[in-house]
Image (cartoon, rainbow, N blue to C red; front, side, top):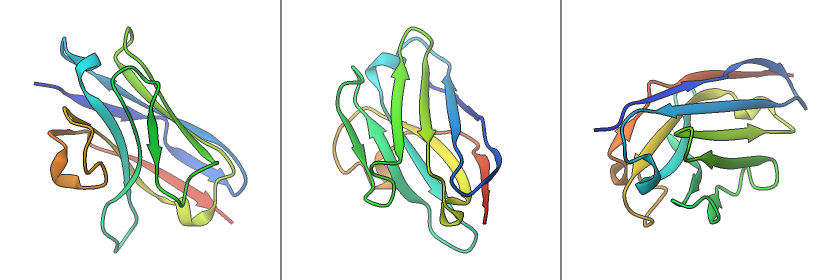
Length: 124
């Protein structure tokens, strides 16, 4: 069982930066692929980024590539999402999620555990 708790959301102006954190409980954090998703009002939840167990290999949605960076600290059982050059269209609730497999990472059904989400609002 893994519990995930996100933090770091807030209100920021366009062009600004935020770093989200997702703290995990449990003994097996390093065996999980970790992902970030987001859901804007009236829209479906969408994939943002994922990171493999060791932290070396990552994957990003095209919409955030070059602006967002996912990283993890297995000793601290935490995954991060550094968001730079934020745009109003990045406004959403951001969720972290955990899965055992590196496949179909954009599919919500691939993930076994989800956090409660943290709100990110980017003003223009």
